[in-house]
Image (cartoon, rainbow, N blue to C red):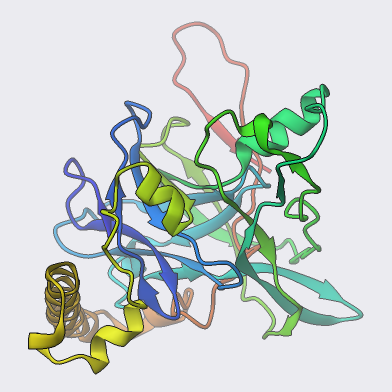
Length: 318
């Protein structure tokens, strides 16, 4: 899980098959961003989960803007009294409405079509921008206040930003370890999203940003983030091995998973106790459980209102 030392109690992670992916430090990430590498497996669906626990502040609500491969931002929203929701909020894909029914298309890892025999590198700027955006899941966190219901209806729409790229000349990558892109799976029925909210953003600049750079196992090895013999066994097979049969790398991974399960159990036990003390009337504001990842609940445009010099910044939400 990715954490921020300046904001203890906040964590973000990428899930596959309901389990957090192991993370590897990115030593060359942007200085103002917490950057991690994770392993991408072709064809696997993934989700993004954000969880808050004590001592993270509940003075304000939190807006989390998510961008996958540079696609249009999607938003997760935590009212102050729901920040300690045990399951946090999980973003699994893109929701849209068609013929009065709601559907979701889940995020999926897809291999880039790298062609060793392709000709010249396309010279258009769109190709370069599209290629360099692949392989990164980005989260930006902002504090919000003045939260109130919105009368606007959900306007879910299909997302065309995550289309499969065509053939990519190998030399276009110039030694880049980029190996995958995110695409969307087949439409799945989902429930209608809940109510929308308006709010004011305290500062336009995020108080923390996360980058998750997903790469193939071979690419992670090429980056020397994983040793050549590490995780040669499928991760799930660890549950089937006896301790004496495990390699040192597998023992380390088994220990990491055991500690992670113990930490999660303790956190959930503590947070369940906290939530039981929350007043009943607060329970109907919004459900942040895993099965209720409302895509459009807080997609609100933010712009700076022009103001005289010296006047405080005002964020207008429309």
